Length: 96
Image (cartoon, one colour):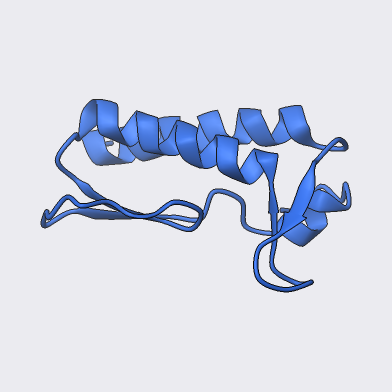
C-alpha cells in the first residue's frame, strides 16, 4: 500500500469513528432544501479527514462537500464527501 492509500485509509477510519459516535443522536440541519441534509457528524468528519490529509500532504488540493475548495493548486486533488447517505444516518439507519 502506498502513502496516499495509507492516508486515505486513516482518514476514512477517523471519519468512521466520528460517524459511529454520532449515530442515533445526529443533529440534522438542512442546507438548501428539505432533501439536502447536513449533520454535525458530516462537519466533524470532514474536519478530521482534511486534517489527516493536511498532515501528510500539506500542498494537495482539497474539494470538500461542506467546506468547499482549498486554494491550493496541485496535481493531486482530494474529493471529500464526509458522509455518503446522510438521510439514512440522520434517521438512525446504519446503512451509510
